[in-house]
Amino acid sequence: MTQQITAQLLKGGLTVDASGNISATKLIGDLQGNVTGDLTGNADTATTATTADSADTLNQQTSINLSGTYSTHQLLVADAYALTGDVTVNDNLILGKLSDDGNDILIEGNYTFTTIGAGKVEAGYVTSSGIGSVDGMTGTLGSGVTLGSGATIDSGVTGTLGSGVSFPAGHVIQTVHGANVTVGGSTSSTSYVTTSLSVTIDPIYTNSMIEIEWQIPTTHFNKGNGNSRGNFIVRNITAGAYVPGSRQDAWFEGGNNYLYLPISGRCREILSTGATQSYVLYAKAGSNTFYYMNNANNPGYGTGSEDHQAQIKATEIKQ
Image (cartoon, rainbow, N blue to C red):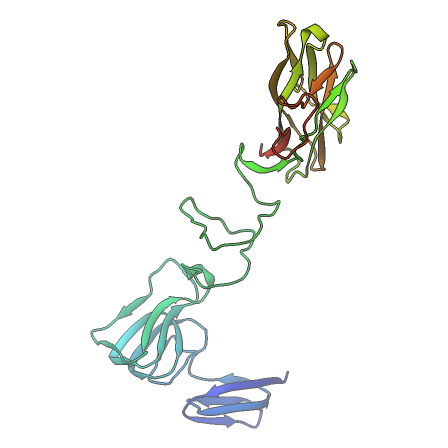
């Protein structure tokens, strides 16, 4: 097999025998071209002495001897490093292991390390098992990444949490508000009819609890006129059914004077689907005409922006 080889060669020579085998030790310069055969060097020994400007392959050695001046950016890979002389580092010298095998990286000897200028000596692992920080990295964290209990998400982090993110039970996933209503309404029907209060929510999960809350600032009662009672209920339009426990009754058993009262309600249901859900507040009269969403200062139903507003919202809660 012919391969294209481009390499930074070190001090020494290059020999090609009659069979096409290449033997190289301490070359210098650039090698480019098509090379056929085996390239061998002195990196196959268990213990390799290195000096300034030498290099080894990524075959992890048992031990590498260190001495002299290191003036280029180099990565050495071994279980242990032995100082056989004083070491001077003018650039980056990385003393590494291919992975964390449970044993410390050993650096032994009675000689000294000296760094000059930007020179720096580092020790660590080549593979990700030895990376203790992702500071400055970019990309996507895989599905197997787990944030520990002490993890902090920085305020500068942006993005959207997808549907695969797990939240604890009781966590509020989202809240959706329906359009506020200021125009009054009334009904004489003794069967439930729709009001203008509605809200639609698109659940993130398939088994969430949906809690509906609604509020009407003013309802109008006058027993003398026969309009002393009314009822509300929330209907899930998507499911075609009333939400259990959502009925709210309102009535006035006083005299013949007008009475204006706020009324509100809350109900909830647990879904078995992730489909979009639409909820509408219904009302019916208990006697004569039931006036709801009325303006207390204007029985003819005010429509100004300062008037009371009826509201409804839906909240998704993780189960």
